[in-house]
Image 1 (cartoon, helix red, strand yellow):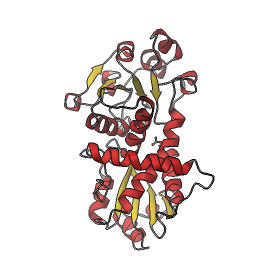
Image 2 (image 1 turned 90 degrees about the horizontal axis):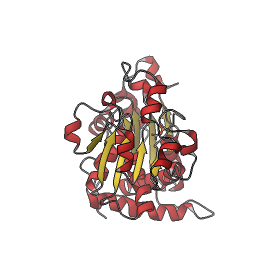
Image 3 (image 1 turned 90 degrees about the vertical axis):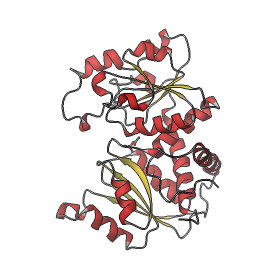
Amino acid sequence: MSLKRKHLLGLEGVSKEEIFEIFEAAQSMKEILQRPIKKVPTLQGVTIANLFFENSTRTRLSFDLAARRLSADVINFTSSGSSISKGETLKDTARNIEAMKIDAVVVRHHASGVPKFLSEVLKSNIINAGDGAHEHPTQGLLDIFTLKEKFGEIKGLRVCLIGDIAHSRVARSNIEGLKTLGAEISICGPATLLPREIESLGVKIFYNLDEALKNADAINVLRIQQERMESERFPTLREYQHLFGITNERLTKLNKKIIVLHPGPINRDVEISADVADGEHSLILDQVENGVAIRMAVLFLICTNKQN
Ligand code: CP
């Protein structure tokens, strides 16, 4: 077993061997999920706390289900309705929950760096479920796992991330993981939605969507994150849709089959048209299905690592 880490805070620094270890475990988890009784006793006696300080549908339910499929006990905390509204600090909240004898914390927070902070103040294993615009490692893993299932090999695969790269933790985790596995990565979007440190990312940059599509085998379409934009980054959603929206018309012109991922939630008919999201190019629901297997694999490998 090569995943010898106590926490999963991001995909930066995670080796090829570790990613493949997670994928191998996820493949076994997928087999468990095909059985009539989709549950194994692997994490019996382990207690996992899901701490969600920011809204989530897929990640929260997926981590919850993944833990239950492995027979762990789960407690779910969401900041709304909690004592955060009475002024309790993040550190106090986390340490009080840990005092209930939990073993691992899955955390989502709107501020970058919170999982790392918790890894310094708690004894539990910490798994990042998305922190600000920093990283969303299990989303990156499930995206890449879905591509590997489809194409067999990531090395040399041309993957383009499209849209709001500047605010996207999904983009960062995808870039880290894809780079480690040897993919050819490009990004495409309006200059105002690309990060300032763009040169340091080591990826190709396209400002024209049709050019980007011609040079890709697969695309990962990112949500316009209006809640993270402190100012308007483009004139109107209609103009964004016209220049950067993925539509069937655009994909048909390519005369090749291109694979479409989207981490969700989708802004239908903004960054992706409804017919593409639901169409033959889309692996969006495969991503969601694989998310449970990837999270089972991560929980299993982190929580059973005797060195932790
Ligand atoms: N992809 C993703 O993180 O979705 P949620 O915000 O619904 O968890």
